[in-house]
Image (cartoon, rainbow, N blue to C red; front, side, top):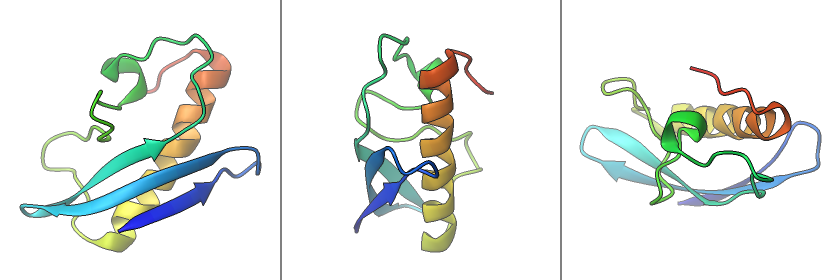
Length: 89
């Protein structure tokens, strides 16, 4: 399943793919705004080079509703990191 998300400020569009993966739902970001020169490492963006969003093992979303909620939270985090350069844990 693919879904789009418009940021809270209305200025950015993200495209996400959701797919069952074992006991949870994997989230892939298929499109996002550029990082504007920020470090793209997974430790800062929580985004693997494959486009999959990184979660702590055991804390992955287990249903579609939670997966969509976490994708939105990640999108807002991504924009904040892009704006400030300060990564969140």
